[in-house]
Amino acid sequence: MGSVSIYAVEGIDEISAGDALDVIIGDAVAAGDVAPADGDILVVTSKIVSKAEGRSVRADDREDAITAETVRVVATREHPGGITRIVENRQGIVQAAAGVDASNTPAGTVLLLPIDPDASARRLATALRQRFGVRLGIVVSDTLGRAWREGQTDAAIGSAGVSVVDDLRGGVDTFGQTLQVTQMAVGDEIAAAADLVKGKATGVPVALVRGLAHFVTESLDTPARALNRTGPTDMFRLGTDEALAQGFADGYEAGYLAGLAASQ
Amino acid sequence: MGSVSIYAVEGIDEISAGDALDVIIGDAVAAGDVAPADGDILVVTSKIVSKAEGRSVRADDREDAITAETVRVVATREHPGGITRIVENRQGIVQAAAGVDASNTPAGTVLLLPIDPDASARRLATALRQRFGVRLGIVVSDTLGRAWREGQTDAAIGSAGVSVVDDLRGGVDTFGQTLQVTQMAVGDEIAAAADLVKGKATGVPVALVRGLAHFVTESLDTPARALNRTGPTDMFRLGTDEALAQGFADGYEAGYLAGLAASQ
Image (cartoon, rainbow over the protein chains, first blue to last red):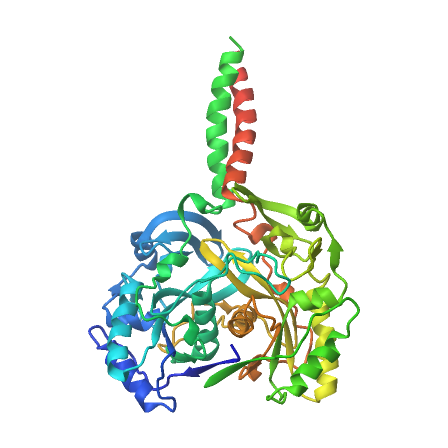
């Protein structure tokens, strides 16, 4: 509380498969104006994690890559430019194109998400805590669209040493009443805040966030996977058009049989 | 680019209907450590805007108030604590409980959203630009849940003098390729970032964001309403269970008629 500052971590060049990302990020942080301190959070764009981890694949057809990363289709829509597919991907995240990215990667290749962004975050956190001797946290961020809102925002797809949810359940407000807002997804808010400094078209893939030490934990077991909502509690597990069509097909079948029987 | 700082604006007490919110916010900012400068953004929790605008209503039953604010039901779900209703409200926002709030307001009352949060933002921006003689922007924030993500984040429901969308369409990435990410909802990212400083259980309803002058515009005509996605482009305008049921009913009717006809 009080204030939060977010700094761009400059000087990180193009990343290649096999690069020691913890060393590269550490060097860039060390060369910057802000010396890491307890409670700092580094927000790392998933793109450079993917590149270092060799998640770049040849793909003459990005659509094939998307299909391969898709566990379950949520909704699709055709538009002049092609087809938009909102799917649940292997990482358990519901997002357009399964998170497969053709930007900021050489033509003829696409970039898949890290296999396990939380594990990637833990590896980075372990190495950087060791290097700098401070309790810092790592958030791995990706860009997601949203239902009912135009545009995209960055969100947390990996986390180590950063609480991704601030659980306010049972708390009271200034009138002493039980708070209705139960859980703030602070991991996503941290990712979104960092995007304001990192930007998209520029090459700044890491930001340092200071002032949120109360969300930085000793334990690195703070998976961003906890932010994924799928399964029975997902009220939007299937798009409206898809669900209308599926319901119609099921209803037609049942109605047809009933109609046949009624005329006997 | 470079850095962003977010400061809590302390010293704003409980707001009552009819309060001159622009004066109260202005006084709190003036009493703080950070003198407003060109390019600053004040993020104001919608709650205090609602209170000043007399949007508190007697409500022995919060559910009745929600119904009154509902334009269209998107999805509902029963749970042990009651019924959750995701609806499109009069402001055009899709959110739980139509944005009706029973927290941080005296028992027996609920707080409706401002009738027109963008207009509220414009009034505040006009007054505060005049008072401080700087080009500042106003974002009015509210807390929204999300599809496919646990927890809530703050988002922009009103804006004046702040671009809520950063349109990157047609831009190129570091490899000279056309960017896939088309539009970043920076208004929502700014609101989310401010929440990290404002918090929920504490009484800090305003934050000052510095470092995003490139998003602050001369014109105050920058409605956050542009972030609402409803209508035909909304792939999730009806919840999955609701759409399955509606499709089933329609299909059953059609199938029944076909079954009757087939047995003639």
